[in-house]
Image 1 (cartoon, rainbow, N blue to C red):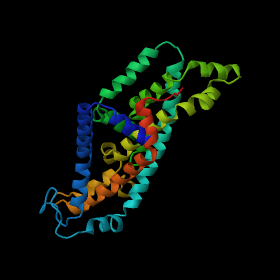
Image 2 (tube, rainbow, N blue to C red):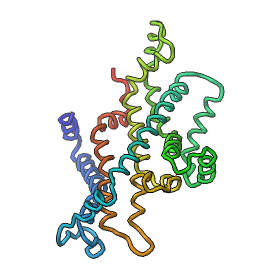
Image 3 (tube, rainbow, N blue to C red):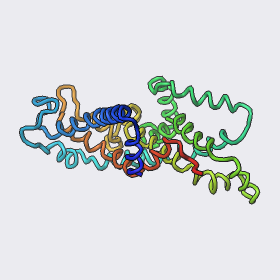
Image 4 (cartoon, rainbow, N blue to C red):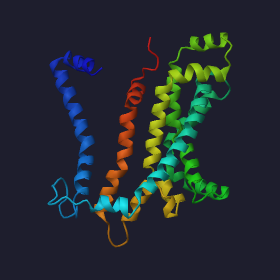
Length: 283
């Protein structure tokens, strides 16, 4: 695969090749600079004394030691992991089935459903603060992990819906017709025919939802007040007080926090790239 991509790049005209390499190098630079800056800053005892990309006079690991020893960051990792996995599982199961219904079945209001889902992309989370906060209190789940699971499972539905539905639209209808001739009902057709083919799209939607839930701060800081129940992003607020900010500990904790999403993408990049390229069905 890598050789074929390199051969394809070499076959391009010289001008196009130079522009392509320049754009790729620029995108790589923009993506890596903040991470490199963050890592270098986390090794400084006082990042404000030597700001930017200045190398530290001596490597200071106090922030990392404090993150694991004093803050017990693994406990908050467990909270974030549990909430993200459960909420993603619930949302993807619901969305994958509902997207199949919208993609394959004709019913009254189908266009309205698509329009209503699309309009949710333009609603900022802050506009939903009062109704969601009121609902959480009425359900009696305020300051519980169930509150975040409910919010995360119902947020970001539109993006996951359209990613998965796009995959369903590329699946030939003849495959479903053949499954029904063999005696499969809608559930069996979905599970044995549609799901295996659309797996890259579903996995991509799951990864995007997981990253969004893992990095979410607004709702995590609003509905959770007990320190033991905080998620990893909400933990970052503990480094800032009214009088000072522990930048060394803050940057060290941020480095630790961004590792799981990077590892997750490294594990599922094949599905992610395949889904973005739109190659759901190969002849």
